[in-house]
Image 1 (cartoon, rainbow, N blue to C red):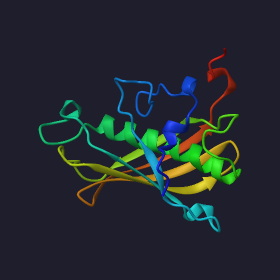
Image 2: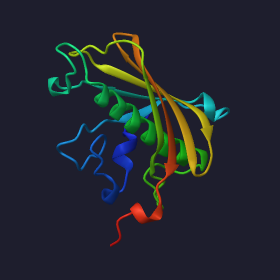
Image 3: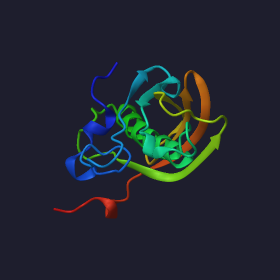
Length: 165
């Protein structure tokens, strides 16, 4: 649907996140997109991201480390929140002032072992959209099996986190 990842629309000074920042060459550089955008019922909209974890993120041989899974859910959630906030305000992603969200709370439930060597798919669904808070429910799947579910309560980035100058 959208060919530009949400995270690639962040201003340069806000693009250093280890999980999704395009300016962090050591990070995961997760990319999130609209999967379905519903203008009539914004809560019916969904987002998607795909990620192939490197073997260094092994819990035990053959399975992905849980912290990596939490990191992916976290970054897909905050990216989805930013995109939804722009959409709800009828603004283009990347327009200023930036609507950048950070994690207020993260809850992850691990439902099945997550296999290594398989592309992971994250689907985000919205359960609440307010001006300064967006709640995103996320499923993480491997081979069409849901391995983890998470909820990200994303809050608008506080002014004191925005670099000056």
